[in-house]
Image 1 (tube, rainbow, N blue to C red):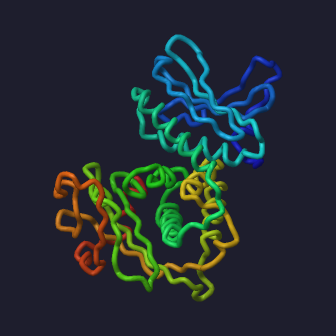
Image 2: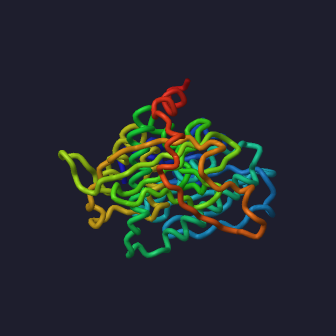
Image 3: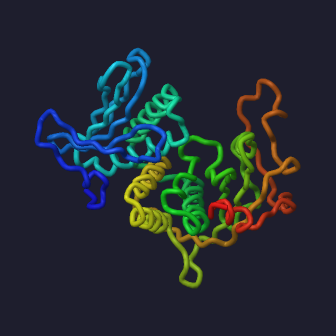
Length: 330
């Protein structure tokens, strides 16, 4: 159990009927609490307004009790109680994930909030039941490395740990990987020796009504150069350490995202060593080479395509112009 855990700041009550709880994040729009019961068990609580009939049954999680408690008329709470102390890292990462996934939901959207929390719990139930015997495909490893690299180099150098993590939206099911203020960022990372094609997984990936889209294209060398370079394990450890030093909850958020990717620290991920070759930004505007949802014929339910990088040169943007003002509160 980590010494800097927020639960360490909470005392264990002596009264068997008592619990000591604290608001997990006063800035979060919803009511989440950390706590302990008289047995010293770690608790995580989500306060809910609504009727009991609308509350779907929560999933079962290994080592973690998940259940509803009635508080008062129209007020309930969904409680997670850590039963197996060996699952502490998973428990804290899950709690951070639930808060991150609901951060954009207003207090008046209780039904939506409950739906998101239960969906996240089911997702974690499935993840924890899967066997971790298979290695991540290389494309997933490079994609994860690229997102961690962007987080470390571009966002973390301009923002606090907590604010930079709030921007990381792809693992929560959103179309683009990051949302930096009004700017949506899609990260595409590939080997420097790969073909110069950007693979787009859906028409919605380069389409949005809610903000500008920036396409970030990163290419990597797969060997150390001048003593520089990181393996996937090394970069993940760096990011976790940096975030955790700044804020223990931020460290839990990173762990939760890594688990969403199916990543765990394994010797096989100590190689290869990647080095950033170049990073380019393209602003997706009306004439950008892309397929948008409105031009897709009725009946087409899925579509992916590729873009030649050379055709995007007219849309190049400068990193500081794109992110400098928005990241620094301008």
